[in-house]
Amino acid sequence: VEGDDLYRHSKWLAMMERRLKIAKELLNPVDGVLIVTIDENESNRLGLLLEQTFPGHEVSPVHIVHNPRGVQGDNFSFIHETAFFVIPLGRKAIAPRALTPEEIADGTSNLRNWGGESERLDAANCFYPIYVKDGEVVGFGEDVTQDDTIHPDHNEDGPDGSVAVWPIDGKGVERKWRYARQTVESIRHLLVIKPLTRGHQKGDVEVQIAKDEAKQKTIWHGTRLDASTYGTQLVASMLPERSFPFPKSLYATQECIDLIVRNKPEAVILDFFSGSGTTAHAVMRLNRQDGGNRQCISVTNNEVG
Image (cartoon, rainbow, N blue to C red; front, side, top):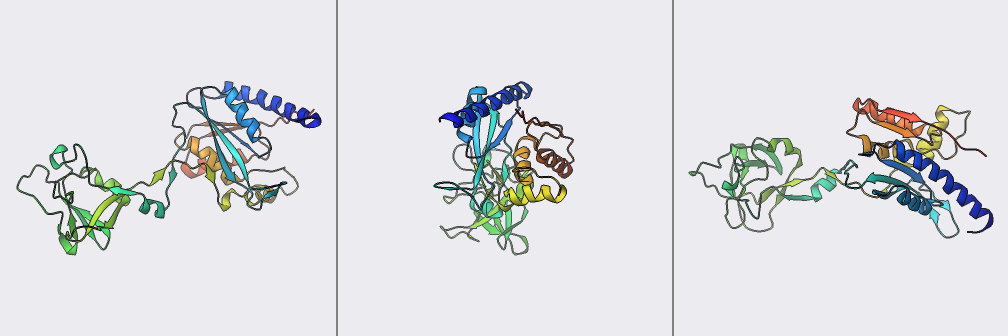
């Protein structure tokens, strides 16, 4: 980097360092999270600066496809920006993402326990029939863990044409369900019926459980993240006489904030590059959706000259 470029980069770094040091003082030291978005021109320098300024923190970049049409470079067309999440080490600060129905169906495991301490008498209230009909769970029977007179087959006839599925493995060992009878109905929506590919038990099905949440991924894409449609055009529709350079997508901004404050209805969010006010708008939308009382402090100081 030489000449004017060196001056420009040095000035940018000095400006960012001043702001980040102040942000560090203002952040909640226990669970405060800093989010900084940047385009491809300065993302490498910003990443290094964040690691230098926030020792003892995890600095995680998330790539957001905010311009699917692309910005033409000499060799590549750039379609993404980077959001850096700066999180205190050891803190689980990022809320999980909801899985799609397809992901729920694909990511299942057996509801029946296996391995150590998985047999019928290893826990109370975990040996009962699950009634299945037409590929769906239609009910649950009573727990008979302690009733030594009942030793069912893996699958039996249930009421109203259903199949009663018991937690018995392919070798005939009486095991237990992973959820007790008094709690299993709370996860009923996560139960998936899958056909067996082995054996000849009645009904030839087993009960599996899916997850409905997973960790966030580090590449985001979707129409709602488009900064032109849900940034530039959205702001222009509300303030037609004003022009703001490169406003963020409202929904991308809301998604970033939601990851941190989803379970913090009284959180305070500080935006010290407030521009057109997208962060404040996103916080208001979050409050409207879940009844929260979060506050947003917006600051603009372009340090002109």
